[in-house]
Amino acid sequence: MSVLSETSNRHITAVKFVIAGGFGVGKTTFVGAISEVEPLTTEAAMTVVASGVDDHQAVANTTKTTTTVAMDFGRLTVDESLVMYLFGAPGQGRFTFMWDDLINGALGAVVLVDTRRVEDCFAAVDYFEKKGLPFVVGVNCFDGAEHYELDEVRDALGIMPHVPVFEMDARQKTSCRDALLVLLELLVSRLSNKATS
Image (cartoon, rainbow, N blue to C red; front, side, top):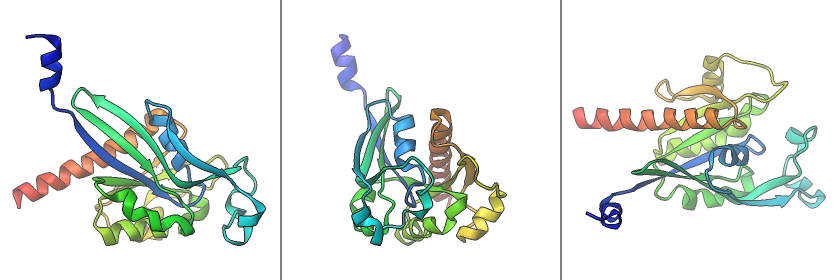
């Protein structure tokens, strides 16, 4: 059998995951850290014009000068049969009208949380709960942010015990990989539970 025919007989499964959370929480950083290709981003400069619409106080003391206005996109090949496509959702409230399109065909989501602004993630958590899309919560550990126990973060977000909550660093490839593995484990567990019920 030729190499060409072996390749054409191989089945590749593509899965779609969404990375969500509040403004400036690290979604673009997450996609950029883990993507094997140069990520597609839709970053636009943060301007004074938007100051009356967007709350920039959360990132006022950082070097953040841009914001996602549509989505981020990255790809990760797990092995010869599995490819993950990652879609970073915009975090500002005025762009949430795009979320329905972004989750179309998605198997699950990672919601990033900044413990300095937990309330900014309520919208993402509520949205995925209402849509019935499985999600996990990654507490993105920002330098200088106060540390809270994971159960405190869970209580603050009001999420159910079956939703995994873990600490991570969106700047590190291995940490992003581990977050995606937690999401995959959740999905496999849900499939197993459905099969046995």
